[in-house]
Image 1 (cartoon, rainbow, N blue to C red):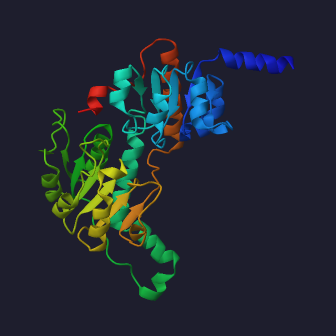
Image 2 (image 1 turned 45 degrees about the horizontal axis):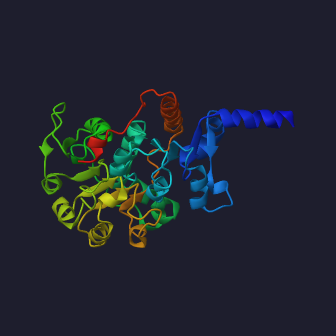
Image 3 (image 1 turned 30 degrees about the horizontal axis):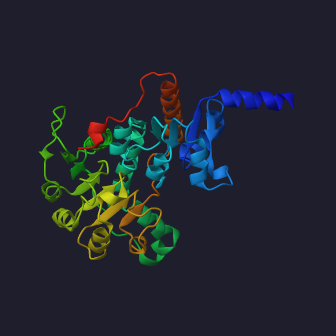
Length: 334
């Protein structure tokens, strides 16, 4: 019994962190996190969430969450003492940044931890669509090769005109990889990047009309919601391909389905969807669309790096030190 009492005492003395979700990083590293923080886990409690939050409202100053938590804003309204939100997400679009700024709540995010992994998958999706790797794999495995003969011709990668939407950390990693293919890279972003020489477009439609593929790397916000609409897809054209490893709602999904079904664009590679985890059945029937289940960031290496960053941000907060990866509100609220 003495040992149990000691463990309880140690737990009480640890900094308290409310976990909402929980995020994937928590499921992987829960044991490690519990050695550093006293973790409040509402999903393990028999009482309703609102009551659970009310009980811990005065003592909760830090929250760990992710982009899958749709109720974050309503939860924060019940937590007047919160001064830090740590999200495991690359983008903070699921957080009401205006309200956090008003209340003096700092926000820390994954920043560039996943940039290389997202870029790898985005390029991989594009290669798969053009070279028809997944479709050819299915063709072979279903025994169609001996019956129908050679698989239809694929499309060459080298020399393609690639339009990158959002030339931040991920966009620049994508560009670096595609330079090796001899691609002609151009981009659209909020501002021209003085550090790069790629052609810059202020208008997405103009970028699309001068590209063979659009690769979406921007954040989701009020300005980028349904940024890829019918007009942009029309400008991309019948030979065009679109790749999205950013956020699903950047594309008008209904328009995308129609353009793919009617052959008005050539294909798509999608890691994200507008209403996850639901994927339009019409897309699943097409062999010129390649999917992954919002998994661009999930590698063993990046998850370990994210754990280190999450712990570093929480420890910095509880030690009154600068956060390792703070969200700069002005960068995301333009």
